Image (cartoon, rainbow, N blue to C red):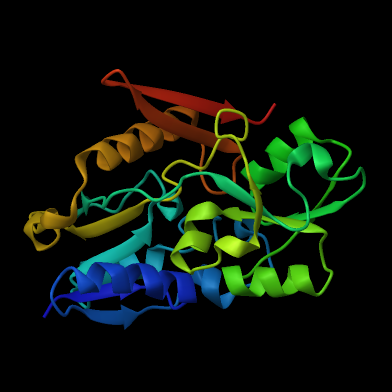
Length: 252
């Protein structure tokens, strides 16, 4: 039986469960990461600020405790450990960012409103597009952040649309950001199935070539720009007339 390594959040389990259903009875192995243990500090304050949601899972893969690591592609850093590879990227879900709250567009949000996010990229984009808003730090899993929104800790929050879709929470979306303006995180909305080198056949049947190419292109652009999970860098790709285009954004 194939052992799938995953974080323990509801979203991570849902994503890994989707993979398990397509691998004929794979087993989920829940692994706690540094980012799961520390839910108060910013990501750049945890260790060296890199791989806070992937390092422990990757180590379990290297140690042979799991056979496949199921990651949100956006959580992966550019410096993948030697001996590991991304074997498959299933068909990508919506890569856009979503605003959860009572507003129907960015323009409708009143000046001075508190917008919750833990992402340096989202905070940077909001600072450029709406400098009159107050960005407040908001850590936690999707359900935790929504509870904080409901409790009044922010007037609206920004989350990945894909996570809300996978958790059946479409009704919580007030509006979706235009990716050409509010550029998504590299790999957002995609899963990355990581294996030990030479074992791609374990999950190769789940690979969606167009999605894989897009994720590779976005990760390459971020690496070229020197970005990571704590640096405000974004990349978004799409196919147009058979050609792959990549747009990027770096905080000014």
